[in-house]
Length: 295
Length: 154
Image 1 (cartoon, each protein chain N blue to C red):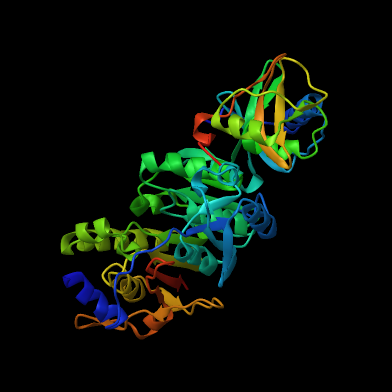
Image 2: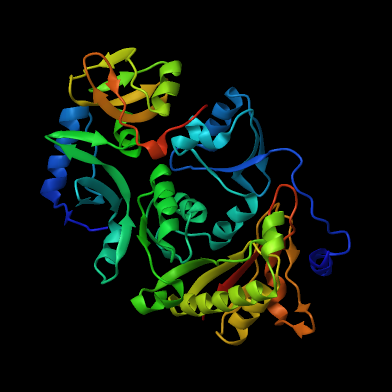
């Protein structure tokens, strides 16, 4: 109950935790292997009902009479099972073929494979993750999706800057409490200490990412956490201490709310309203996304 | 990942010839960085080379294309999908039921064969899907789909 009250302070008094009543899969078409139209046709032929995600035509909500993760289309790499909210950071990053991209906390690779597809398998992405075990999933997903433009590294992200590598754009989808998923087990396990510990790590990752960024480069900072300490507080830190600026996010047909301007007596920088929060619903996880530029 | 060797232009041409000899299709790999690690062949974009040239430990890079075994080439599912669309040799078609069994890991029988050689690797297709590459024997297609890529049900 304490958490609900906390989240009502963020999202308003009508906020409630509603878990899905029916299984709806959210998938992203892997355009490196198949067109959206062909995938929809194949899934329709197998008895699926499909709705395109309003803000991203490659994203599909699918009602399927079988387990999609064991389907031939999944095995052959035609799609990636990925929450709609988690498709937004790569859209905000808007990678170009000519740019050098870093995905600092990449495993298991949903966003890395999305970025690779957006770059049409050209240019280069460095996908890093500190956890060796999670790299297996990342490598498997890169292979399944037919990705050729990724180099995988296994380094502590907080020390990645020591490589001396510089990037035009960095996706910083940091490890977080995951409270945006609204999974009861996750909500139960999160407490003040775990939030504080992760918030500290996230700031260290922001420092490292900033050092790896070219001048005029972009960092997209994202979490699937609802906690202001992991979101607004860290972005406020990036502006005040690291000298980054926050840019407005423009995505057509996306419902979001602006980031909080204050939390528990602490006032954040004015430009924080350019960062966005996705309100958790049955179909979309709660997410926080901020586009930062280094001058 | 221990990168054993980055293939030279000449070695890439030899690989292209091997693919043509085995699958009857000419594909161009010269715009890619092609390298070997153990016995596997990997393909990556040329831009990946600038990361290779730095002194950082690389875990993996690019796409696992296949393995060369005694002058024959065993393609991965993704390698098969690249080569298979226009392949005119060592291609088999299986029906939908066999495709289901094949992706569960079973050996299957070919419904249609295109210029297949016994004891060579063949690209396995079902309708418009390219399912991977396996070994063509006299009485069956020996399943070589890795366990991690097998399905339980459709």
